[in-house]
Image (cartoon, rainbow, N blue to C red; front, side, top):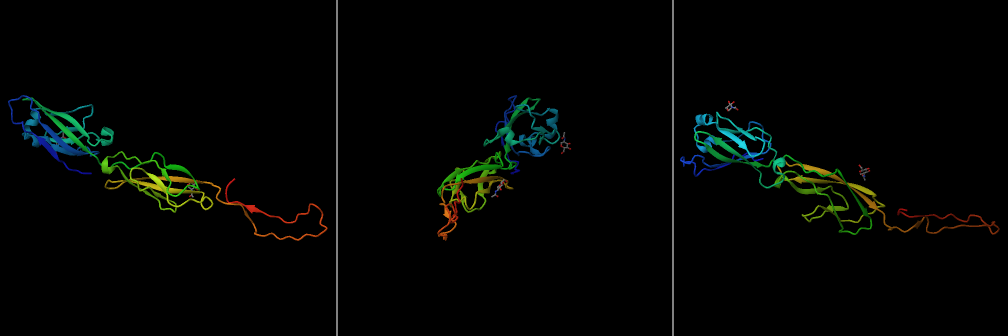
Length: 262
Ligand SMILES: *[C@@H]1O[C@H](CO)[C@@H](O)[C@H](O)[C@H]1NC(C)=O
Ligand SMILES: *[C@@H]1O[C@H](CO)[C@@H](O)[C@H](O)[C@H]1NC(C)=O
């Protein structure tokens, strides 16, 4: 949050007092979500007006639209924040967010255009639509395969938006180094017989100060592939049998198992 009260006064024609309505632009910067009664600037000083005249000349401020984002103090000439200024609600994710108003005075009639440049503040965290992502991956999937992940969203603008992702350390996956997309990259092959499913936490960070973050759990189900052959319980089975054993006598029991499913 930059709390600079930078203003730009383009006031080159103010002194031509023969013109009844003098146009003169005033521009101020204000961080969003400032407290009520925050002083945004002093128009009296910026226009070179004598303080006692602004009350008698009935100075007033009218915003384009219905909301009156700031008032003027007729004693001091200050512009005072009077309404919540939420940049995301007013301007969505646009690079520039400017509120415009008319500053009017009587005797003689004088009109100024006032611009309020609303600066973004890191007041939103990155968020994922759901708090769980489910992915099914067959264990036979080759190394280097990619799986796209849902991106996080941050209502703030620029540096205050999502800047990077970090995946919980694990044996199989890393995040794809391709910066345009958020993807899991299979670095080591899966083995369902070792691990049937895993949960990996993905964290998204913004670039604001203080930094904000949001997380999602990626639940990976490893699907079976026929990667195991049946195995007998012994390499050699030995049995002995009487020569007069009746038909149907059990000679030996063998068994085989297969680590694969179904
Ligand atoms: C204007 O500012 C003065 C000095 O800060 C303060 O005493 C006064 O209450 C303010 N007036 C209004 C209407 O806010
Ligand atoms: C992953 O999370 C799910 C849901 O919370 C849980 O049922 C499952 O046991 C977890 N798996 C592992 C390997 O921790």
